[in-house]
Amino acid sequence: MNPATYELAQVNIARLKAPLDSPQLKDFVDALDPVNAVADTSDGFVWRLKSDSGNATDIPVLGDEWLIINMSVWRDANALTAFMYQGQHRELLSRRREWFERLAEAVTTLWWVPAGHHPTVAEAEERLLHLRAHGPTPYAFTLRTSFPAGPAEPIAEPVAEPMADAVSRSAS
Image 1 (cartoon, helix red, strand yellow):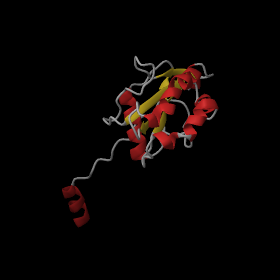
Image 2 (cartoon, rainbow, N blue to C red; image 1 turned 90 degrees about the vertical axis):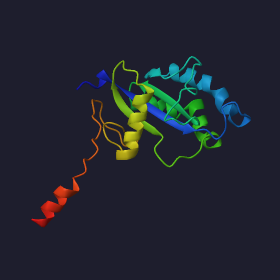
Image 3 (cartoon, one colour; image 1 turned 60 degrees about the vertical axis):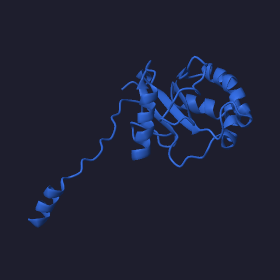
Image 4 (cartoon, helix red, strand yellow; image 1 turned 180 degrees about the vertical axis):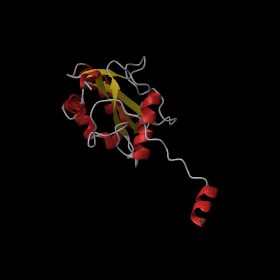
């Protein structure tokens, strides 16, 4: 399998502590365009989700109006982490607790997509929920627990054994 035929998709969501137009989120909102401009020109950047507004803050995710989504595609994990942990993006990460609630479940997931594919919000939601249900797998993983580039199938939910079958086997 040629890894260059795959690119790394990432999604992260955050629950706002206040409305986007509030004074509490002003620094965050003011930084969106500059940080996105840096991302768009970063080595290894391929694509990012955006609406007509130029960002994705007005795109609904998981049916929760307080959640915002960020989704992008990168050449590989090295390109993604080089952007994430440098410059203004790193500064924003250090201030995220000012703007976003701490969530108990996973808010970020990664997965490999065929080169040129731009994932949908529905696809991102499916991958994130899969990670929450099954932990890191080749279908949905994290930077800490990653998998090689290539196709992956979701883990099928186990089919419950009918009670009558279990009882009849235990009786024999």
